[in-house]
Image (cartoon, helix red, strand yellow):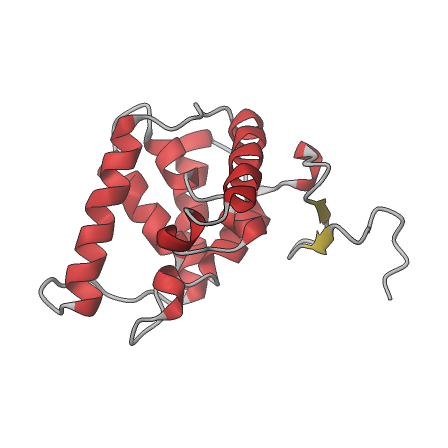
Length: 172
Protein backbone atom coordinates (compact mmCIF):
# COMPACT_ATOMS: atom_id res chain seq x y z
CA UNK A 1 0.00 0.00 0.00
CA UNK A 2 1.35 3.41 -0.97
CA UNK A 3 0.88 6.02 1.74
CA UNK A 4 1.43 9.03 -0.52
CA UNK A 5 -1.57 11.35 -0.15
CA UNK A 6 -1.43 12.26 -3.85
CA UNK A 7 -2.05 8.66 -4.80
CA UNK A 8 -5.73 7.78 -5.36
CA UNK A 9 -7.65 4.86 -6.80
CA UNK A 10 -7.58 6.77 -10.11
CA UNK A 11 -3.77 7.13 -10.10
CA UNK A 12 -0.82 5.35 -11.54
CA UNK A 13 2.71 5.74 -10.27
CA UNK A 14 5.01 6.79 -13.09
CA UNK A 15 8.63 5.92 -13.83
CA UNK A 16 9.85 9.13 -12.15
CA UNK A 17 7.67 8.50 -9.10
CA UNK A 18 4.91 10.98 -9.89
CA UNK A 19 1.27 10.18 -9.28
CA UNK A 20 -0.79 10.60 -12.41
CA UNK A 21 -4.54 10.80 -11.75
CA UNK A 22 -6.63 10.29 -14.89
CA UNK A 23 -9.51 12.26 -13.39
CA UNK A 24 -7.45 15.34 -12.50
CA UNK A 25 -5.16 15.59 -15.54
CA UNK A 26 -2.75 17.84 -13.66
CA UNK A 27 -0.04 19.14 -16.05
CA UNK A 28 2.47 18.97 -13.18
CA UNK A 29 2.05 15.19 -13.07
CA UNK A 30 3.12 14.93 -16.73
CA UNK A 31 6.80 14.92 -17.60
CA UNK A 32 8.78 14.13 -20.71
CA UNK A 33 10.95 11.56 -18.93
CA UNK A 34 7.87 9.53 -18.04
CA UNK A 35 6.52 9.86 -21.56
CA UNK A 36 9.79 8.75 -23.17
CA UNK A 37 10.23 5.84 -20.77
CA UNK A 38 6.67 4.52 -21.04
CA UNK A 39 6.52 4.86 -24.83
CA UNK A 40 9.89 3.12 -25.17
CA UNK A 41 8.42 0.08 -23.38
CA UNK A 42 5.01 0.19 -25.10
CA UNK A 43 4.76 -2.06 -28.17
CA UNK A 44 3.16 -1.03 -31.45
CA UNK A 45 0.60 -3.32 -33.09
CA UNK A 46 -0.52 -4.56 -29.68
CA UNK A 47 2.77 -6.46 -29.45
CA UNK A 48 1.89 -8.69 -32.41
CA UNK A 49 5.23 -8.50 -34.21
CA UNK A 50 8.16 -10.91 -34.29
CA UNK A 51 10.35 -8.36 -32.54
CA UNK A 52 9.75 -5.47 -30.17
CA UNK A 53 8.87 -2.19 -31.89
CA UNK A 54 8.01 0.64 -29.53
CA UNK A 55 5.67 3.59 -29.72
CA UNK A 56 8.71 5.79 -28.91
CA UNK A 57 10.54 4.57 -32.02
CA UNK A 58 7.39 5.11 -34.10
CA UNK A 59 7.01 8.63 -32.67
CA UNK A 60 10.63 9.42 -33.46
CA UNK A 61 10.03 8.39 -37.08
CA UNK A 62 6.85 10.47 -37.34
CA UNK A 63 8.84 13.46 -36.09
CA UNK A 64 11.58 12.61 -38.58
CA UNK A 65 9.04 12.69 -41.44
CA UNK A 66 8.17 16.22 -40.36
CA UNK A 67 11.77 17.45 -39.97
CA UNK A 68 12.15 21.15 -40.59
CA UNK A 69 8.44 21.90 -40.16
CA UNK A 70 6.51 23.49 -37.32
CA UNK A 71 4.95 20.07 -36.65
CA UNK A 72 8.17 18.22 -35.77
CA UNK A 73 7.65 18.39 -31.97
CA UNK A 74 3.94 17.62 -32.26
CA UNK A 75 4.87 14.63 -34.41
CA UNK A 76 7.18 13.38 -31.67
CA UNK A 77 4.45 13.83 -29.05
CA UNK A 78 1.42 12.75 -31.08
CA UNK A 79 1.08 9.50 -29.10
CA UNK A 80 2.21 10.90 -25.74
CA UNK A 81 -1.16 10.17 -24.14
CA UNK A 82 -0.38 6.46 -24.60
CA UNK A 83 2.37 6.81 -22.00
CA UNK A 84 -0.42 7.13 -19.44
CA UNK A 85 -3.33 5.31 -21.09
CA UNK A 86 -1.48 2.54 -22.89
CA UNK A 87 -1.57 1.88 -26.62
CA UNK A 88 -4.73 0.46 -28.04
CA UNK A 89 -5.00 -0.61 -31.68
CA UNK A 90 -7.09 1.89 -33.66
CA UNK A 91 -9.90 -0.53 -34.56
CA UNK A 92 -10.57 -1.09 -30.84
CA UNK A 93 -10.36 2.63 -29.99
CA UNK A 94 -13.22 3.28 -32.39
CA UNK A 95 -15.42 0.95 -30.33
CA UNK A 96 -14.58 2.65 -27.02
CA UNK A 97 -15.88 6.22 -26.88
CA UNK A 98 -14.82 6.62 -23.23
CA UNK A 99 -11.21 5.79 -24.13
CA UNK A 100 -11.29 8.23 -27.04
CA UNK A 101 -12.62 10.97 -24.76
CA UNK A 102 -9.88 10.31 -22.17
CA UNK A 103 -7.27 10.30 -24.92
CA UNK A 104 -8.57 13.58 -26.31
CA UNK A 105 -8.71 15.30 -22.90
CA UNK A 106 -5.22 14.13 -22.00
CA UNK A 107 -3.86 15.17 -25.41
CA UNK A 108 -5.23 18.69 -24.82
CA UNK A 109 -3.33 18.91 -21.50
CA UNK A 110 -0.12 17.48 -22.99
CA UNK A 111 -0.29 19.87 -25.95
CA UNK A 112 -0.73 22.85 -23.65
CA UNK A 113 2.11 21.68 -21.38
CA UNK A 114 4.59 21.32 -24.25
CA UNK A 115 3.36 24.21 -26.39
CA UNK A 116 2.15 22.24 -29.39
CA UNK A 117 -1.01 22.56 -31.45
CA UNK A 118 -3.88 20.15 -30.81
CA UNK A 119 -5.87 18.80 -32.59
CA UNK A 120 -2.91 17.71 -34.67
CA UNK A 121 -2.48 18.98 -38.20
CA UNK A 122 -3.22 16.90 -41.27
CA UNK A 123 0.56 16.68 -41.83
CA UNK A 124 0.97 14.74 -38.59
CA UNK A 125 -1.95 12.48 -39.48
CA UNK A 126 -0.44 11.92 -42.93
CA UNK A 127 3.02 11.14 -41.49
CA UNK A 128 1.43 8.77 -38.97
CA UNK A 129 -0.46 6.97 -41.77
CA UNK A 130 2.68 6.79 -43.91
CA UNK A 131 4.58 5.24 -41.00
CA UNK A 132 1.82 2.73 -40.35
CA UNK A 133 2.13 1.58 -43.95
CA UNK A 134 5.94 1.48 -43.76
CA UNK A 135 5.89 -0.41 -40.46
CA UNK A 136 3.41 -2.94 -41.84
CA UNK A 137 5.52 -3.47 -44.96
CA UNK A 138 8.75 -3.77 -42.98
CA UNK A 139 7.73 -5.81 -39.96
CA UNK A 140 4.81 -7.87 -41.21
CA UNK A 141 5.20 -8.18 -44.97
CA UNK A 142 9.04 -8.15 -44.81
CA UNK A 143 9.15 -5.89 -47.90
CA UNK A 144 11.02 -2.90 -46.45
CA UNK A 145 14.00 -2.60 -44.19
CA UNK A 146 13.42 -1.18 -40.73
CA UNK A 147 15.23 -2.32 -37.64
CA UNK A 148 13.97 -2.86 -34.14
CA UNK A 149 15.45 -0.58 -31.49
CA UNK A 150 15.87 -1.67 -27.90
CA UNK A 151 13.66 0.20 -25.43
CA UNK A 152 16.80 1.91 -24.11
CA UNK A 153 17.77 3.18 -27.56
CA UNK A 154 14.20 4.26 -28.34
CA UNK A 155 14.03 6.23 -25.10
CA UNK A 156 17.42 7.87 -25.70
CA UNK A 157 16.57 8.80 -29.29
CA UNK A 158 13.16 10.16 -28.25
CA UNK A 159 14.71 12.33 -25.53
CA UNK A 160 17.54 13.45 -27.81
CA UNK A 161 14.99 14.61 -30.40
CA UNK A 162 12.94 16.34 -27.70
CA UNK A 163 16.06 18.13 -26.43
CA UNK A 164 16.97 19.23 -29.95
CA UNK A 165 13.50 20.63 -30.60
CA UNK A 166 12.97 22.35 -27.25
CA UNK A 167 16.46 23.11 -25.89
CA UNK A 168 15.23 21.45 -22.70
CA UNK A 169 18.18 20.33 -20.58
CA UNK A 170 17.69 16.63 -19.93
CA UNK A 171 20.23 14.14 -18.81
CA UNK A 172 19.59 10.63 -20.05
